[in-house]
Image 1 (cartoon, rainbow, N blue to C red):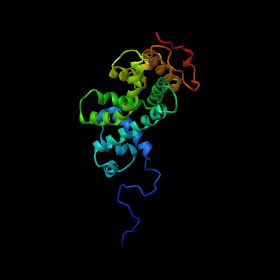
Image 2 (image 1 turned 90 degrees about the vertical axis):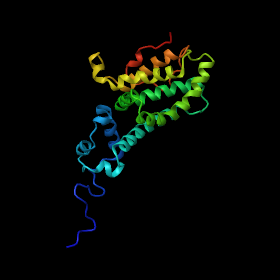
Image 3 (image 1 turned 90 degrees about the horizontal axis):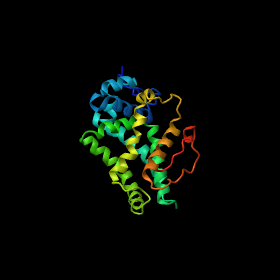
Length: 233
């Protein structure tokens, strides 16, 4: 008896099977896994099993663990780039407004991508090919922000500081988003509005960077954290 032409190999879901994870779900779970266990701690076989897929599911699609990691990181960085690029758009606003909008957009995106912040923290601590790959992905974002920073620093709008210090002021403050268990022990309520919290952190960072009052956002802030008035020193 001939096998049906529509047959499938053992362990492989049928075409169109709803059990096959979509790209968004797959990439989110990949970022979570690499953030929680580190690159070396992630077992692709165990990851496939957690998805309910065959042991070759990831290999069939990405070839190797390294390529899968690269796909997940690229996906996560693309989410950040999209948000920041929109905030940086040269639409007639002053440089300070665009920079402040980019910082706020970055914090909002990071707040909703806590695992990616943890993944970056892990990889940034060790000089490696993975860090080189990650840096190459974020470099276009830095290249877009750097001219604004240079002009605003030159005209005294920003406090004097090296570019790398500015970078870590913005990104280092995102540590909260990836350390929520510690934040809860320090008193962060479970019902905290994450978007409002990100806006507050962004405003505190901007107040530290600008010599005067930072440009205000062009939209109302949700939640109650905005009740804390932020002024530059």
